[in-house]
Image (cartoon, rainbow, N blue to C red; front, side, top):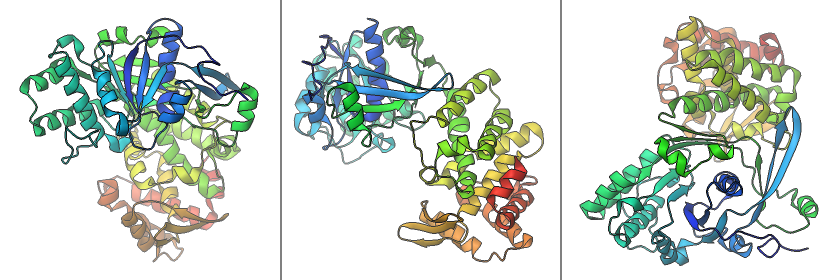
Length: 492
């Protein structure tokens, strides 16, 4: 069987206009796919040179295939399973900076280079006080960016038109602002000229972004069947869901240089991305975090099973449409449209998302994703949301009867044992709280009161929220005495 490369699939000789730090599955199924869509319509006419962030990466495989790879996008369309496949040709090559740093810097001297895209994990945008300009390469991602921009500044003698547009995709709040702050800090630490700092501040755009697409990556279990279908071998084949969203906070004139919307892509340029972040965190992430504890204790294992289940599917829908959306003071049509997409994404038959993996670090996720909906629902409607409150009780119950060891918490549900992963302090706390439980309503109330009082987990004493302590105590007792299945049936 032939291998995918430029002899098998022709590639247009387009200039390199993007340097991309990150060569993994996500960016290739997200940003590079978008560049490809624009190129097909002759709206961008440029390719990306990729830079792998760490020493071990995909550069060899990508270069063997001349930057080409096949992308499968799969999900529900009009309620039916739908699949699209395409060879993506927007990548020119991939560099390993740990042996080719000078080649990376040579890209900075390219006058056609305009954009930086990155996804170096959440920990990638971090300040390293030990980093050095003359390291080959600098250790940190911000260090590499600072060195790259300084090289470009020097080569073009501070030309105002040669500033870059940076679009970090790391999953941290205000990612562009954070990257800019660290670059300026490193410039000061490395004692770079004031003119360079001024050039950074005035002629480079560090844009805050929000990205959304589930990318399932290399389909190890299906690859043989897919390659038979394609008729060629592809070592870096990629898969993802149909849905995509990129929210970019930046000046409107930049949208003309990156005409995503003209290509029909779901990319939103805005002056304030806060509403879109709130929508994603509260509806998409919040629905996961609030529904999964009950579904897991119910006896289900995947998101797909949860959505297909007669009772749990209703539970999720009611959480989103009856409680989360009414807790958000934003345009209801915008929220409802997004929620409809979320329901379809949860039902995606091509993605097997395990509930136990979503339960990872649930306490911190609940605080950020669900607790604001509970508090704001009460503030708006003068009462507590029933199912979101129940979801907190379900989460607390996940830790019941658990024993903490070096691997996490050895816990149990009716279907058998499992390992709950969370911060060790959190696990020890829950183990201690549940150790005094004797099965009575009074003991359930004690558990509720002690858990809600833990300001280290919630950032506040939740016993101060009117009615919440009694409601959580009542739900805990119902779950323990009647079982999760009966408790959810009564609620729904």
